[in-house]
Image (cartoon, rainbow, N blue to C red; front, side, top):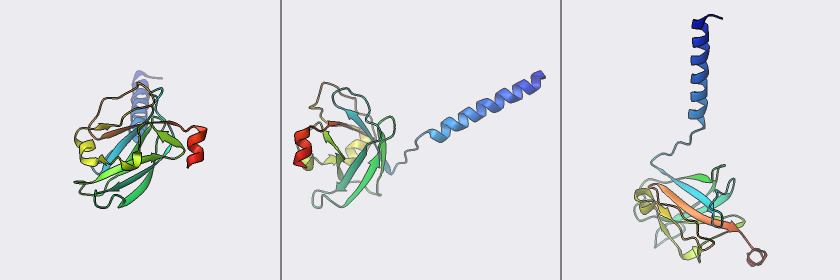
Amino acid sequence: MKIGDKVRVMTMSILLVCGLAASRAQVVSQNSLKILFLDGRSGKPIARESLLIITGTRANPHQRSGHVATDKDGYGIFPLAAGVEGLSLRVFPEGLSLCYGDPNTRNLDIKEIEVKGLVTPNDCGKKTSAPVPGVLVVFGRPSTWREKMDW
């Protein structure tokens, strides 16, 4: 094989790898919110979990709901409607418990999440995370037998 052919094969290989990496990257538009779901005890991502997201305002706290599935890194993307001013959301994992008290009364401000980022309290352990603009970090854990019975 000539040197020119080797260079051509190497270049094509690099382009193929870069193309595959780019196609796997998650694209987050301005009209979406990134949610990171972490285990409150270990700080590790909780992968392939379904999250129920409820959005609304103070006057009407249940305007819209939807499900988000987390990927292998614990991230999920929730699409937002235009005009998030005054909107808040609540997050409920299916089959797991959140690491902060009374999630039914905690409305998380979407505008704050977009501008500064937001990290929910972690009453399950000492792990924490720094806020990142556009990302909501939520801590959870497997439910106890007693908690499952209360559902």
